[in-house]
Length: 326
Image (cartoon, rainbow, N blue to C red; front, side):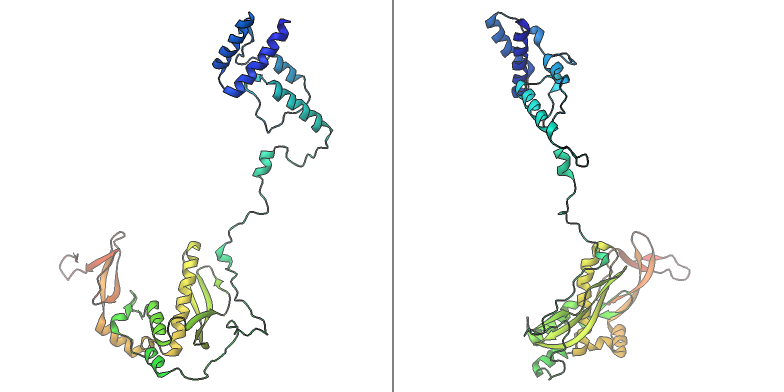
């Protein structure tokens, strides 16, 4: 009789713990109940490493495997509801066929990789951006293959005047190696002035080719619905993360080459003009790298200043120390 009472009180204690997670509060609650009945419950309190509780002994005698979805109670104690649920699951799973090749843990199943995972492609293998090939019956011109309107007629005098206008010396830049160039934004401004924004564009003629150090792609310059020129742009990159920027630079490089056929900034390909410009507007100076202290000569415009990370360096005169200009 007393054993049955302790078993019932032990179950109440376990249920109370799973609800409140506090042994002391459960002890007080069960003690108040036991005092009203005149029975002490101190012998039925859970103890650390106590493996001989009635519920624990009952669980050892079971041959079923616990369901991993539920966390086993601490210290070997189980509630009546949890104990009965395990028995019902054991009766169900014992008759069901098992497949050893599939994991039994549903949490592990959720962590397994699926076919829906999208992996980012390596840009160094190519961009897979082939131009859309239009149907033969389509009324739209397929600029990926067509040469529609090439050399059919000259542009208007206003457009030709904007395209063939001499380049202002203040718009020309000088690279450190002495090459003169016109920034790509200046080409776009000239085209907008000649044809108007939206009346010209670049149409890709092929897929972007990505090599180990550069990207290249062929473009067609279309103006007023007519093909004007075709050129291939190129741009170097130093890391895979720089491929998108190199692709944009490749497009600008193709635009500059296409504009040569329209006569835009044609002076920059004239050797005599280049030599005259360098002698008039450029200078060669010694600079020193502020971190590595390496010195070299660079070309720059006479009205420009040496920019970081370089600083102006004055070579030593014969018999005198070196001087650095700040």
